[in-house]
Every structure is written in structure tokens, then in C-alpha cells.
Length: 326
Image (cartoon, rainbow, N blue to C red; front, side, top):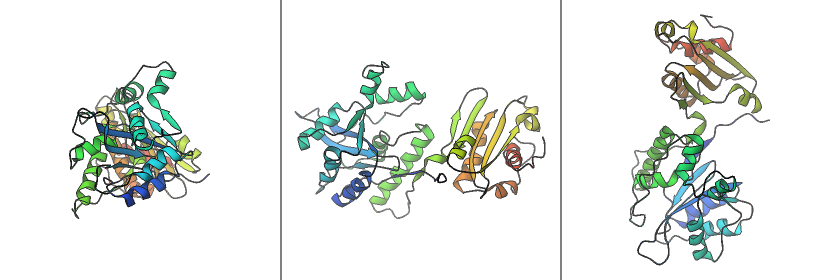
């Protein structure tokens, strides 16, 4: 099996031209599925006025401005209605489908609606997307821009950030959404001529997961099992809190930190920890993964004493049979 590769999601600048739309749809046509959502206005019309289309797969997402001067939506509508290979995923897609039908005389297919799926398994009737995410994952999605004038131009960064969030997928975490918002704002600024910003893809494998319970739980990257399933030969090390002086002094001697490395290259593949303040400690490994740190660089880093952060070093050493305090 091929080794795991970093998964980055590219958030595109607002698409306002037919050329950019056609290029996006050509790539999306190779996907197994696309998530689709729309924003529209219908308060003062007899039919919904399409104001924004959001679409994405596991690698990229974009908002499309159907009101942009000269844009031709044909590539998008072909993908929706004439491509049998790509599954179109909606949530409560009745009005989205109505809009597409009004434009084409066809309904998107094949299609999957997550709200209907929830009803089919007797979980809830007509559950909203944010409630679905909260009930299944315990996470809250910011819906503050829901009631807004989508026909107004230019759209602001908050509107586009809100819209893109409906198709970018897991993990649904506040810090991921905030980072996506910054990327979206930078993309808009660049589109408007600001050359000082440089939008970048989001590496979802480097997003830390934190559970604020007692003891705390935090992780980033691959577990040892997942790393092996991805084809890696691994070195893994675990260091217990009882071996750390600061943890003992705090009266928090229970817990551990585990690190997983690629045995061939020394790449830090993942880290997982349970114990006091691990939601603060995890960022050390997040920075390490972002900078493509190896075990040698971590071993050569000086950690202050006495601190909980020393366990980041000890766990790394443990992976190579060199831990000092166990």
C-alpha cells in the first residue's frame, strides 16, 4: 500500500468567470462525490433567485457567484444533471434541487440527501445541518450569517466563510473554521488586488483534536494503527505523566503522551495524549508536523525544566528506546 500523503483542502477565491468554473468542474467530475449547497433570495420574488453556489470534494471547495457579469453556469449544471458518475450530496436539498430544475428542466442525479438519510434511520425528522453535526459530533457550527442579503455585492468575507463551511466537511472544529475564514478572506483580498496576502491550502491532517474533559485528551495526525494501515513501518513511543516532575508537583500524575514516527525517514506521523493540560501541549507537535519535523530535530531541541512540555521530548526518545526518566 502506498504511504499516506498529506491531505490539503484548497479553498478557492470566489469564482466569477466561466473559465475558472469550467476548470473547477473538470476536476470535480473525477470525484466520487461532491457536496453542494446554495444561497438564494425569494422573499420578494415568485421563485428563488440563485445568489451563490458552494461545491467541494475532499480536496477543494469553492463558492461560485452566479450573478457575476458574463458567467456561464453550463459546466456546473452539466456536472449536476448530466454526470452519472459523481454523487451529489445535499442536506435538505429540496430548494437547491428546485433552483437547478428551474435552470435546466432536470434534477441533479445521482443524489444523496443527508436529512432524508437521518429520517430513514429514525434519528430525526427534518433535522437542520448544524443540529445534525452537533447531535452526532458534539460540535457547534457558526450560523451567524444565515440571515443575510445574498444578492448584495460585493459579498463580504464572513458571508463566504459561512457559505464555504457547508461543503468543506470534517473535522467540524472552531479552530479549523476560523483558519478557513482567514484563508477565504485572504483569497478575496488577493482577488481584489492585494499582493501582500498568500492564501494557502489547509492540511486537515494537521488540525489538532482537543477534548476538554478531565483528564483532557488531544491528538494530531495518525494513530499507530492507522499509520501501519497506510503502509508505514513505524516507531512508537509512550511516556507516562508519573515520570514528569511538574506533573507530580501539580498532583496530576495520571496520563501519557504517545508519538508515532516513520521508521525510515523519522517523519512525525502523529501524536496522542491524555492528561493535564494536553490541549495546550499538543500544539508543539502540530507545529512540528507543519514544519515536517523529524525525530532528530525534536531530540535536539532544548525543553525547559521543570515543565510538562518535557514529556514531548521524552515520548520522542521513548520511540527510539532512549527515554531518560522511565
